[in-house]
Length: 361
Image (spheres, rainbow, N blue to C red):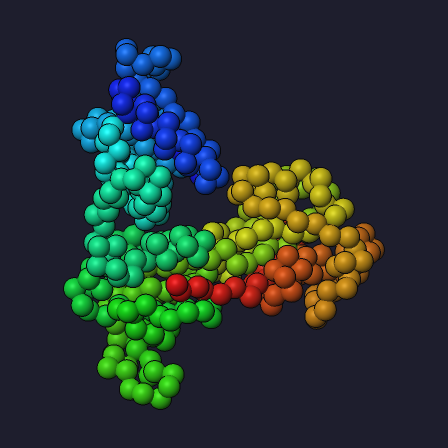
């Protein structure tokens, strides 16, 4: 985690140095600057200008000083829960560490606990689900490495649980651990299911108004208000003729995802044969979508077990009868084919799903 800190006094600098040392020991990348005429090497830019830069570059920002300075500095930069970095405020004497912004998705609450432990301060956490030790859907998504969609629905789920009302839970994937209190296991229709031990669930056969769906499919909305939690669990296999441009490849992949009804965020990587490891159009897509690009030799692809859509042309060129399906399955740790080969204009695509599991603490 890249953390930027700013202090405004000599006392604040001492607190900051202690905090900097402790966070570095935890493996964080930390930069401490001062903003005061009484501090050596004080930055020349304003706190507001400095803050704007850190919103673009840092994962976390810690102000060591008054809350008012932090609030005024971050106000023009605040965008959304899904984008904002963690923002903390520590008083210059190191008595309190306040989680000010992006407590869950940005990790401010967790960082506040760490920082307070380093300097012997009291962490100040104000998010309701933390105060009441209740399930928080955004924390759940982050800890499972998932994307989250429909934040308004996430708020409704939290509000229901905090008020003692049940929220539904549906998943396309298995899980480990116990379903948290407040969540009711539901089917794809949003209706509560009977308990697995045969006992009757009080919400069985009842349709829940709001809930969580762990899914890779865009149209999976079991509840009137559904927050979708999307794991990166699908591998994209791609084959193409030499010299295909990036736009053509991107358009083919988008068509593949649209036909399968799958979120782009569900992709964990893209894959092909090693003959394509320097293919400019594939490398462009990998870079633009920030997807690892994995390649294998023809012998490795031929050895992948399963039934694949053969092509004599592809076999003559590459030595293996199918590139996109085999590479997708291999990239998904020998997962199951989710979408078989689709080909047009010299580009083929396929999708495979890895064996992914949810973890409840």
